[in-house]
Image (cartoon, rainbow, N blue to C red; front, side, top):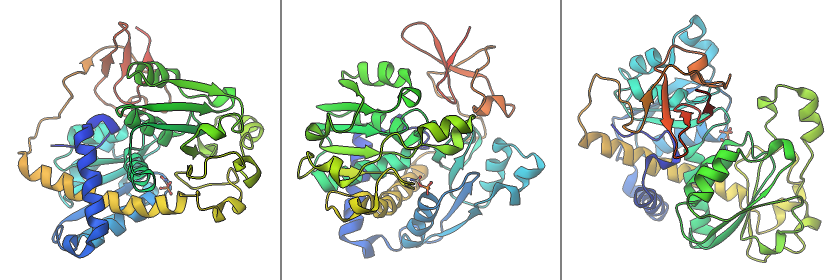
Length: 361
Ligand code: CP
């Protein structure tokens, strides 16, 4: 059974095929209007969402399928203590495919180990958001005409911003990508992504203190919200929340064909005046999210037909079991009884399979 838990669960060729399918859907919506007739998507959202949940819903409806699920875990048996593993076993009796958002990092991976239907990670804590990445890639492809030879500046909360983590992983598999990181010291990109993703794939990265100093070089400016809900210290959030604000003045030296992306929701990191700039692509990006999720649902259901299901939990080949404990309190492995799984790194360390935190041995 194929799932989408992390951006790299699908090859570059498969990503390109999903994007091509999305482009075909955009060109001929009618052709796809019945391809999921009789199929059901379950949306299990343990965390708030507007775009992701409703675009999944809209996507499945446009494919001719139907949707069930919850948007408030408190109204489900999760509030009685039901685990992720049991929940997906149950939902698999009612639905053909599941999209899950969870505040605990790695929860969708646990779901994939027990599910008899494809699981899509719709965002897990600060960790990953692969369907936002597909949205971003489709948007870049439509706006810039290519996914290679791009200089992209990521600005804002690069520590907790799961969309940034997933997009950097995805783009690092393409040629000629340059990454510029613009963040306060406290919200820098996790070092493992810089070392184990960018450096490993020979993607140059550079940290700068201001947007202005790199603006003329950028093909894409990817703005992000400071993620209030991830802060343990409210004072720290208040101190950092206005670190980077994009306004028309700061865009003065930007390329005429640069595009501004933002996964949304925005708070105040992009002023309203910027919305009128033709380079502001973030609302076009939202609509692309629906098309690419249509392509993804359709593709995963096609792949599911090709592969027989099995009752045994599925564990990726490159993971090992161990007695160590993950130190990340936001990791699902510290909240539910799950297999202790780790991924060995090239330097002889281990990373938690669920949240990718380094683990002390
Ligand atoms: N971009 C995104 O994930 O938005 P929502 O939180 O509204 O789903």
